[in-house]
Image (cartoon, rainbow, N blue to C red; front, top):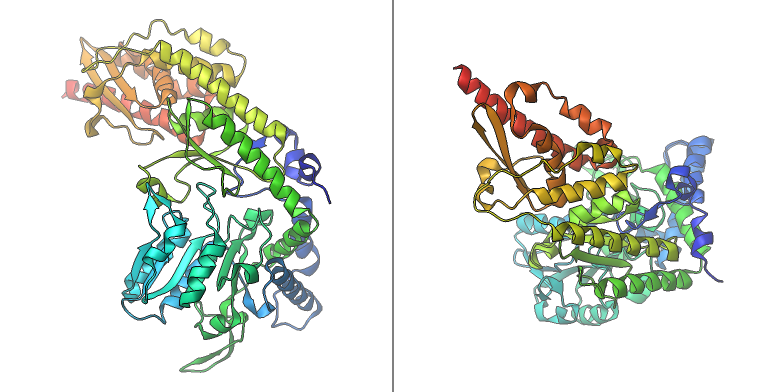
Length: 556
């Protein structure tokens, strides 16, 4: 078999829509797009098989039940489990990890220990924290350096009280993957239960739980081209048998009496309530879809893209790359040196390039590394050479604009002496033909806002802005003057737009302005993210409140 990213991409209807023809989608660690076969499977279930499973004997119920058990067999084969009894359907990796934390920890003794790492997704940290508190257990972490786990040092935290080790198969924040073979050798010697969070792993690797040697494996379908709201838990049969059920309700019982109930056998004792049946149909289609691909060639293609992005970003003085090329599942995580990550994300969104900014549900990793907020670009097999080229060119253009604005940056001051907005020509902003032109103009406008350390206090903090912003106010001879500061150039640009209209005006003049309408007519609300738009309106509300407060005090 061979692999072509362009041909592969054509199987995904989202990219065929007119509005998405130029989309560069690099947010695959959050969720992947869905091929037509998966979309059709979900629709087909509702059109031809919609009924509840197992309990009813009519034709539709039988068809739905057959579908669920067929997909269970496919999931078993997908990860090379020993039996369908070892496959439990759930809403995703998060629910599976919560199930394991509650069911396994209830059988432990106070003082027993659980080992996780700083690179875990919140779903593989918080459930263990909750269980440790509830059952009086001890939570330990793999040794780390500046937040990055040193998985080869796992043995340093294992001892005779260690009962559970739950580790990521690949970090969703960094793409970092541990050497599972080394982990297996350590844990098998000590008879410790081992859980692998495979949420990021399943899209990029062929999974063989027998080869991995883990006791439990969890994953979410939406991470590997399947629908959202469904995933599955693999557990060794002998361990699942020994675990109590987690949720109670329909499907997981055989008989209910006044004082007690009798539970169904595996895997149904862990599948209380009505399962997400259409999503399970889509999960089966996703597994079949991947089975038709050359998985090794897909992985090689993804790695080529990731190495290219790492190489270019590491060569640039404008970015600090946090992720590493080696042992990487398909993620480039980096920080812009001369601007905020949020500003860069906004610029990329204006180019129709989808990335993600934040801690990526891995706050512990970010905090231990210095409270890092990173830009994350994550690839899938449908990403092309052109996608990466467009992404890198957009970064280069962004840096050029940042350089131009920084050359003319405002003067720092200890107070907030009035900024001069007279050079700002509103007509020039209006005359820009497209969003990119207006965005560039706003960044140039940001240079009129000087740094004002003196106003950076709680009293002046504006709540509702995505990036921190401070707005001070004073009134002189009936006219209102404002001092603004922020670390974000976009916020400064939006602030300059606002203040160019109201700074130095009287109360009556400001009250006659329809600034919300001006914002909308410029098309800013259409192109700015919701949080950026909210930031503009938060600044506007604070400014108008300050004007009204002066008016109220004068009337008293």
